Length: 169
Image 1 (cartoon, rainbow, N blue to C red):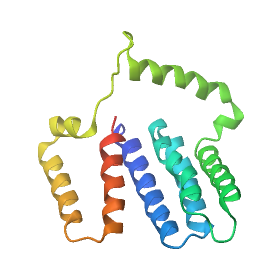
Image 2 (image 1 turned 90 degrees about the horizontal axis):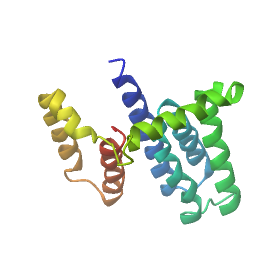
Image 3 (image 1 turned 45 degrees about the horizontal axis):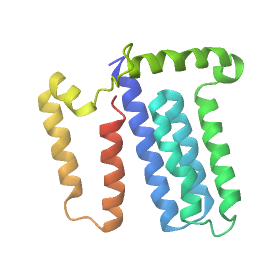
Image 4 (image 1 turned 60 degrees about the horizontal axis):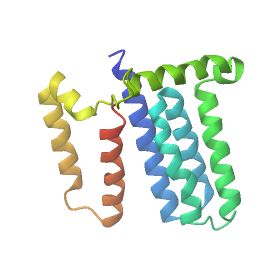
């Protein structure tokens, strides 16, 4: 469980951020977007690949302009909220920034390996090796959640499924 905890927390935070991003698309007013950015920043502080959730949120105000703030101001506020979430989740990045920068070198060494090739593990094959019954249950739940949904729900689930597969590495 000690190892899985970071995966679980990142998945929860990214899922909540995606949900709030969809709420923003429904009604483009800043509050859900800024909260989504904060949660994505927390996800990035919990596990580095949680930062994958930040990039789409930074572009979202350009694609769907905020009714009140406008594009550039919304993009800037989104970035500030993501940074605030990141530093709230990892305050030592402010107090001792060298600790985190040394972790980047270690992460890149793990990701690319000593030979320079990509050393990434996908979540589903790893889960299948560890617990095939739970993996089958996860796939059944994902399949059931896609059954008879609206187009908006399908977009959300497509993002969710991609994050479940990708974030497990």
